[in-house]
Amino acid sequence: MSGPLLNLPAIRAIYRFEMARTFRTLAESILSPVLTTSLYFIVFGAAIGSRMGEVGGVGYGAFIIPGLVMLSLLNESISNAAFGIFMPKWSGTIYELLSAPVSFVEIVLGYVGAAATKSVLLGVLILATARVFVPYEIAHPVWMVCFLALTSVTFSLFGFIIGLWADDFQKLQIVPLMVITPLTFLGGAFYSINMLPPPWQTITLFNPVVYLVSAFRWSFYGIADVNVVVSAGMTLAFLALCLGVVWWIFRSGYRLRT
Amino acid sequence: MAVPVSSPAHPDIAPIVAITGLDKTYASGRQALKRIDLEIRRGEIFALLGPNGAGKTTLINIVCGIVRPSAGTVLADGHDVIRDYRAARAKIGLVPQELSTDAFETVWATLRFSRGLFGKAPDPAHLERVLRELSLWDRKDAKILTLSGGMKRRVLIAKALAHEPTILFLDEPTAGVDVELRHDMWQMVRRLRDSGVTIILTTHYIEEAEEMADRVGVIRSGELILVEDKATLMRKLGRKQLTLSLRTPLPRVPDALAGYPLELSTDGATLVYTFDARSGQGDLAALLRRLAEHGIDFHDLHTQESSLEDIFVSLVRAGA
Image 1 (tube, rainbow over the protein chains, first blue to last red):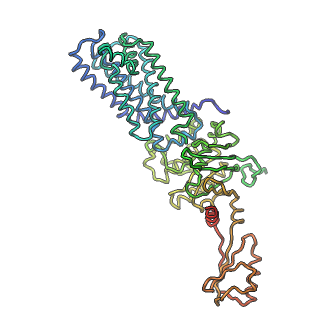
Image 2 (spheres, rainbow over the protein chains, first blue to last red; image 1 turned 60 degrees about the vertical axis):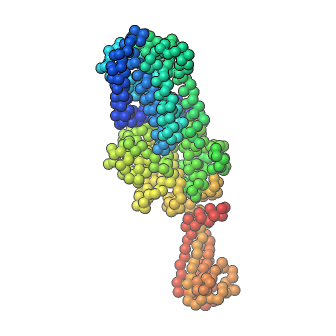
Image 3 (cartoon, rainbow over the protein chains, first blue to last red; image 1 turned 90 degrees about the vertical axis):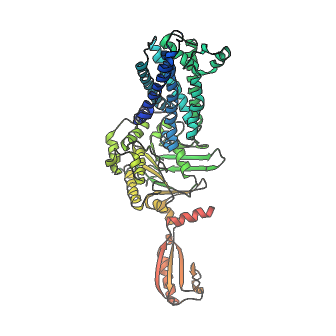
């Protein structure tokens, strides 16, 4: 094998291309999630939240912030990354990617890197917006950034897999809509799982989103439904699983090379 | 003065593309390519001819890494396209048949993207040269969706040239392109060849192969049935016909002329003589003398040479 091990200009090219797409579609990609989240804060935080008690010593408005950030992060990571790789497949421009001197490593770093960057930006924007409505503190800022980045990367990778798998627009939408949205709503974004009846407390532990929300909330307020180490472990395990699937897809040529 | 190594007249040097025993069977069971062996010479224009569905695009896509072969090897400038794909693909540029472009990107951005994707450091001067060569420079900041079909085709060519490939694949470069633009395209391809790029094009416009190619390969139902210098092919398979309009119709070809492959039209007014182009004009003069000796007079004559198209049609028909 000759030549460099990693095609750095290719990673840069894909990353720049994807980021350019983000800024071209600023309204849909950044502003609309920020607006949606603001609506949640107005309804749940200010209107309803003022009539609700504290959860684990934290005001309800502040309590839901980490969960809401996760809600947007998950949806946006998945749909951005899925769309990013689905579009070239759909428009036919994927030929260039497939005929370029790149391996799946460059493709994933470029596409997933850009999608994750966008998600982190979005997360920061939502947190800044939330500050307008509710005062909150961040107990473990370094861990908060780590969980934000880890979640963004993991779910961008998951979205990337969906984009590879989808061969029409319906399939592109179905997983975020039918799987991710219910899981996030039931993942403890708006409540602590201690508030559920006992059997549901156990069932809900099969929902991976519970771990994400719990860990993220811990980085803010030091309270968690599940042990933080377990949460981080579960997220890393999911990341590893996604990496394995992407590696397999490119190795086998599934849905890419005939 | 040294002979340039890119000269197609020197086939003895190592081929730039070497295809050996290439097979492709799709998951559907359709066998698209059957044991293809083909060598492309450095610096030539090679035209791959064949009817739709013959396997032209499959062959190109395997060399470029888009389709995986079932068996066989492909070397691009000495690099195996699978084991050493990075080095191999860096040498190759591909202009696909479909006008697949990033509609919302500008011409300049899409070129910069292509160059980066192929691992090259930015080189605005090179991209400018490419765009000027393709008469796209004044549209460099235009979004691709605002361009005409012919311009989009040229954008695809510019993208393929952005990383300075030494091998360029043009899959049906002039499909759906108007006559004037087609001639421009041909000129551009020749200039590229002159700059040292080896060009492999597929086409079903025989005119295109006849106009441009140094060598021609004919592919039919996944089999490469012929590879030949275009000139040799025309000479070998090209037949000429001499048509004589007789002053007085003949009831039949006179016995004395039975040695010649002559055909008489049903009304007896036209005599057609089919001969091999290689046999030259000597035969023709002899025939005319013999006709005069037998008092056969004519008021008009014309000769006709079969084109690559006739050759192609007869080849493809032969096996059908």
